[in-house]
Length: 127
Image (cartoon, rainbow, N blue to C red; front, side, top):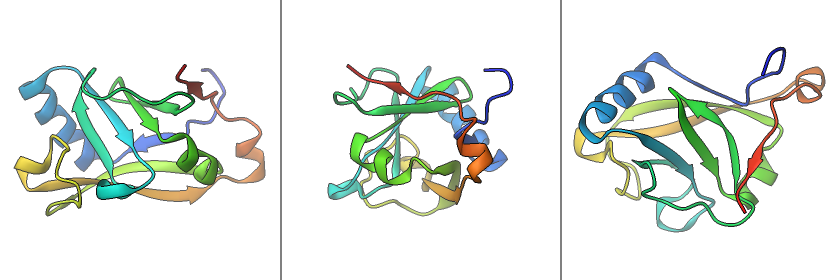
């Protein structure tokens, strides 16, 4: 949306991994859960490989792919900008598509300024 502040971005390193996964699996999606075995690590799936729960939040797209957040986690982090990054090693869940590459997606957060918060892109909620 023109003039609106994005809630989400990605590092070039993360985009490189996404392009590699896209070449292997096709269309992708991201989901960041609020706990359990995967902790709050963002997970990458083939598009349609995970179904967001009712009222989960889609905060934006990375390389054209939806990035969903657990509804409760979003309430906690709604004042923050998410930057998707990637690190060497294995994440706690191991379900994400980058795991066989010996990598794990992670998110860096920063708080929005009050001015940014008033001008954010809208969030899409699952039904």
